[in-house]
Amino acid sequence: MRWLCFTVGALLSVSTTPAAVGGFELLGTVHAGGRPKAHAVVWLDVANGAGLRPLRQPKKVVLDQRTSTFFPRVLAVQVGTTVDLPNNDRVFHNVFSFHDGKKFDLGLYPVGTVKQVTFDHPGLSRIFCNIHPNMAAYVMAVETPYFSVSDAQGQFTIASVLPGSYTYHAWRSGGADLTGSVVLEAGKPLDIRWP
Amino acid sequence: MKRIAIALFVTSVLHASVAYGQPVAVELSQTGGYSTEQVAAVATQLRAFGELAPQRLRFNVEVAWAVRSADDSDVFGAAYPYDGGLQVIEAYGERTFLPGRALFGIKAGRYRTPFGISSASDHAYNGFMRAPLIRYDGYYALSNNFLEQGVDVIVGSPRLSFEASVGVPGDVGHAKRRSGLDTVLRGQAAFGPIIVGVSHIDTRPYQPATFARGHAVFTGIDVRWMRDGVQARGEWIAGRPFDGTTTTGGYADLIVHRPGMGPVSAVLRAEQLSYEAPAPFALTAQRYTAGARIRVIDRLSAEIALVHHTHQLPQRRPTALDVGLTYSLRRD
Image (cartoon, rainbow over all chains, first blue to last red; front, side, top):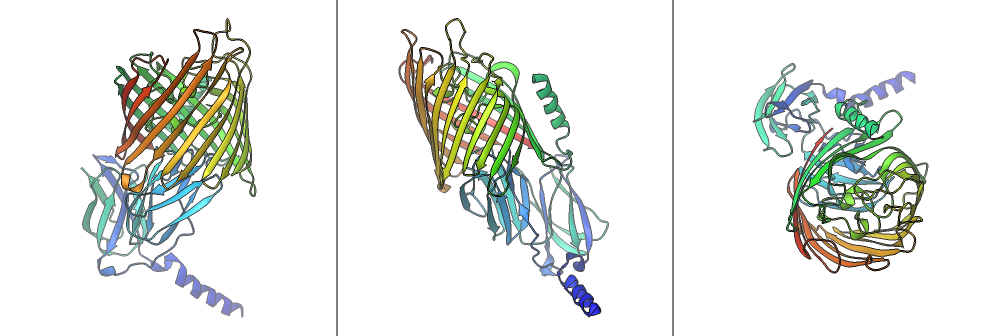
């Protein structure tokens, strides 16, 4: 019985954990104007869909509201992901997105309240608060599990990438969208550069 | 206090991206403006804020430097003074608890007087470039430059809360209250898209003690309603700036940002102020504002407002066009 449980558990584990996908960890850097660029979104399209990982819903994706600011300022998600938008401020917020991407208006809600939005179409959504005009964030929804947001040093990591040919895309606030083709393999970094 | 706040601010800037991996950010806003009252202004605002682990202590430090070409108008006086010096506006730490359905929060340090609609982003460069008459330094009411140095406690639930602040004045700008114990009490309730608040302040007058005796005491009601990109809000206050005088007044704002308006938010304001005092010091005024805030590009916004006032305000012209540009940067 113990062996049966172990075997079933192992099989379930193999069928659900990302580690089963294998691949390597792609490291990369983003530069703009010769300097490392934070908050850039980088994602990979897989040629012919080969080796594409299935939609993997993370446990929780959060776009927080605190100190009258969105954290993080730039969020990348896979299409179909539901994002929590909690109000962790003592003041009310009214989160909305009118212009591109996902359009919604969550209305006024107080501290301790969590509202959710499912980003069910690819593209960029600009998120604002109607009460506090300085609050702004971006949510980029992409149709691939291979995506990342660069950190303060302009570095990013994309896990479980299989070797092969990809089309890469990169977006940053205030910059033109970049796209190109690349052959990726373990140990070969991907450098993204805006002029 | 100022040195401590600046030291905290510099430390925050230097460690903005490494403080325990928690979200700590620094914002820089550069603003320039011109009014047909022949007043030009420029301002820089720096804000460092975030949360320190593991205590989850949230902090906010805001400093501002601003100067304007003339002081005989209230244009651009929405959120901080234009004294030409570096001013610590806010410097506080706060912690909020949400046990079950309850709310408990405590804030200590230097913070804006929590009377009515009082946060900076409610008044600064959101299309309005002047503080409401009841919130400008010189009109015998309150001021957006009133700051408390003390402790603020909020209890209740997210939709029904009571707030009490006890401290001493730490004001910036021309209207600096005399030293003494301040108390501010506030209750707030939310019903669907409507938020209603009642505030009461007992403080010291900012006018000279030679003629302004007693306490400054005001009570106010504020209402905010928001739905589908349309926000209506307003405040009404009544009280005495010092013994033997009374001030009543308020404003009503309409702020509209509907999907079809793209990057433009339209703003409208109607307001009134009545200061009753022995002649010739009494003051009565109405003012009307129509304006817009336009998000030009992601970091750059423009504000434009047409302002008309009546009666006795010490402005250069009864009608003025104010324009402003704000460029903002943020580093996490």
